[in-house]
Image 1: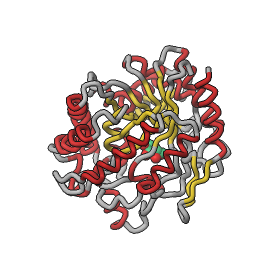
Image 2: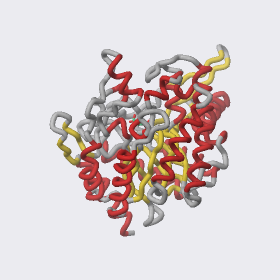
Image 3: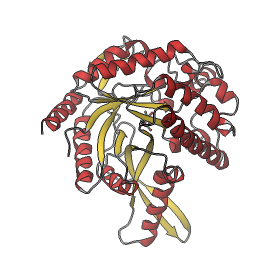
Length: 392
Ligand code: BGC
């Protein structure tokens, strides 16, 4: 990496690791939909967070990303739970003690049940309700957070929950998807201002899900047009609509896709890109990370890879995956992208939403029967890269 201050670490999110998040909409959904995976105790990280952070430190991490569970902090509308804030304060103090930078996500796919019952992000008052929580948290945790991530992947949340109908509340409506997305843009802008008014020097951004689009056929203008159009819609729309409200940009990168536009009949196609795949069937394509980082130079803001990882239960591909993606980051830096950190997804195996506990994304394996942690060999490979890079 081009600087010894480059941050290395891993990321998690509350509902995926904490366990017993009984006040959120996912939990409610899990109980009422037979066959839908149940998060249950997850990794019991709510109780085991200290030992998990110590493991991250032992693995050489210099930063850690996690999310606050809104439904724990505000289980009833307007009523904030002080004990929960104290819990997160302890986590942040421990990170400081371990000399690790913190990335704190305020919304990672889950909502309090009371909020969901009021139509969730479709409600015109949703941004204000979210910002009331953000203000409270920003005041309570002032000075302890290094990087605030207001919303994780608004494009994924809006489309999975309101377009594809795969996540609660399982709607399938283009109109609702657009409304939710725009309310999240407003919520981000308001949160940016609220956090800055609590602590003016705060660094605030989002974690944007990005896909590297490549043309299916060389030399076809229509495919290039398709690539451009898809990139604008998926990667850039939110950022452009919230321009002036980002101190840094977080990018979550997992895969690439081929785009093809045929004019007669008029059809935009997504084709597989080919090559080795993860346990999720996602093609491993490190070059795509370089491509998006270079593309994001246009914002002239520091860039952080806030997620990048692989479901790989037998850990046969993860080490190469990490090596190749860090090389891809270096290649982007060499071409002028101001990339300042890389957070692997994930520190621990965890609850992979509608796919349950089967996919294994962790640098650390979790035995869900005993909650024992086992460090995977690839985590040591990552550690060696971190140490080497910090000694340069
Ligand atoms: C999400 C994570 C998820 C990961 C792997 C990202 O889109 O932020 O919550 O576990 O992808 O699917």
